[in-house]
Image 1 (tube, helix red, strand yellow):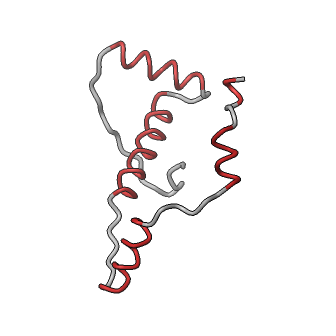
Image 2 (spheres, one colour; image 1 turned 120 degrees about the vertical axis):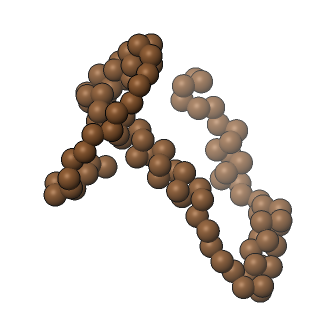
Length: 93
């Protein structure tokens, strides 16, 4: 998620301890990024998750009743999902 080329570049300053900085630097290096790229990517991902989690949607009474009924209903039987859940993950084999 790179910033648009025409976007004005500004500084964001942070203070941290050396242990945190070293951890961030090692992770950034593992991905072939510099510290700024790594931190901005992580911050963008978290910011997007927070905002999506806070999404508000409005329903009229009828739609709200249908929505809550769907949430309260027992899940339908799904044989493929049950088989998947019984399968060991590749890293557990």
